[in-house]
Image 1 (spheres, one colour):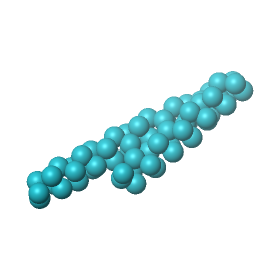
Image 2 (cartoon, rainbow, N blue to C red):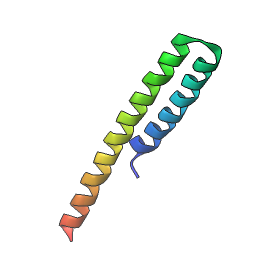
Image 3 (cartoon, rainbow, N blue to C red):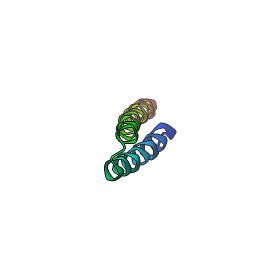
Length: 63
């Protein structure tokens, strides 16, 4: 598993928490920041998935 997938999942989870706290407290800035973290995390996770797929394809091609 690529390190980007792990970091992306962590950032996505952090964003979810920030968004939930922002919703609960009525803090629009915190809520917005959480949404942004979630998007960044999803993107980073997707990049890591693509890297994993390429790595696996290269491994299969070498066989």
